[in-house]
Image (cartoon, rainbow, N blue to C red; front, top):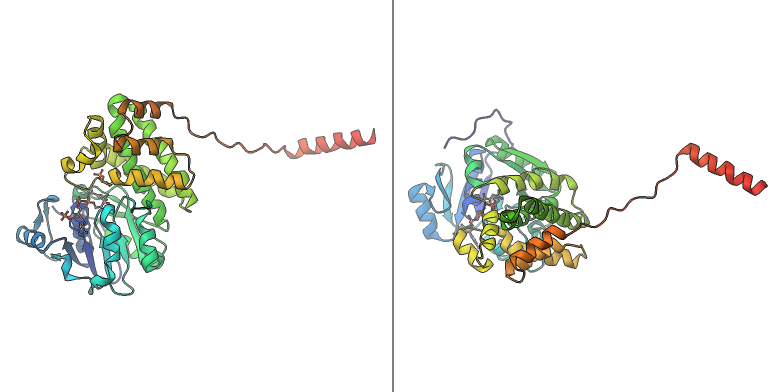
Length: 365
Ligand SMILES: NC(=O)C1=CN([C@@H]2O[C@H](COP(=O)(O)OP(=O)(O)OC[C@H]3O[C@@H](n4cnc5c(N)ncnc54)[C@H](OP(=O)(O)O)[C@@H]3O)[C@@H](O)[C@H]2O)C=CC1
Ligand SMILES: O=C(CO)COP(=O)(O)O
């Protein structure tokens, strides 16, 4: 498929090397874009046999069929290490991310190489946003993440609405420029935690909508709205910005996911509603379904932070089989969000003057 054509600004440092760890649908699609964007890119598969298959076919038939892998894209197993990488992108689902992150130094990650998470889920056991796990190990200036509506197939053929987020402005800018040069819109953000929680919230909301839609679309919309509001109250406590949640990474990605016929998270919700046990869903879907692991982590994180989150925790119980579907729908239909806090109305200038005059008269009388 040809890359989308656009007149774009060239990023600096084109000779730099990027390694994408994890050759699933998104890791492969991101690797194709990085190569198109001018980085010398390597895609690392979990096993050498997988690398051989991709090399022979010049296509990832298992995860991204129909997309030709560019001749400039190098392919190897993860055993090849990371010592040559100037940027490392992590394309593995969040369920395995902690181990993958912990192993980066022993795999040869250089001291200043930035690490960029592609995951839209949280890391066990605490439900930590991936960039916070990375930050603990490498410092916040070396860490970034990618969010936004970005279904892998469409991204490589027609584009996406990416967000590159980092506390390091140069890093966010450099990543965004590479994607833009590859023909894909990429916003720069200084709110990695907000972008990651938006991705986790939209996956949870898509699963909730999928589980509820057969019972009524108002209920499906209410489920998604409650979850976004509950996660937002938590995100705000962690210092995230509302723009992340209403922009590409939040609302934009929610719409893309809920409408996509192939969305794995919405499909997982539909399967739950059809009576399939949460534990059996990954085998049926055949690819990462982030929300199945992330929703229980999210529910616990909200509880620990004392955020009132009845719908997110109800969804976690629906996934584990502890809440029957009818009770879930009833919960969604009857939950009333916390009341707004009205500020005491301050009287205007003339009203205050009249009141002062009245009081002075009372004193004189
Ligand atoms: N697919 C999409 O359109 C999008 C996905 N994302 C996010 O990207 C992340 C990755 O998802 P996605 O690519 O879709 O998932 P997939 O299920 O398509 O692929 C996951 C890949 O990760 C590999 N992997 C798992 N664990 C390891 C490990 N320890 N070391 C090396 N490789 C490993 C798997 O290898 P193996 O085959 O051997 O199991 C597989 O190749 C998720 O967080 C997802 O939410 C974000 C935007 C869009
Ligand atoms: O994150 C995605 C699109 O932006 C992919 O969503 P699904 O994992 O639900 O397919």
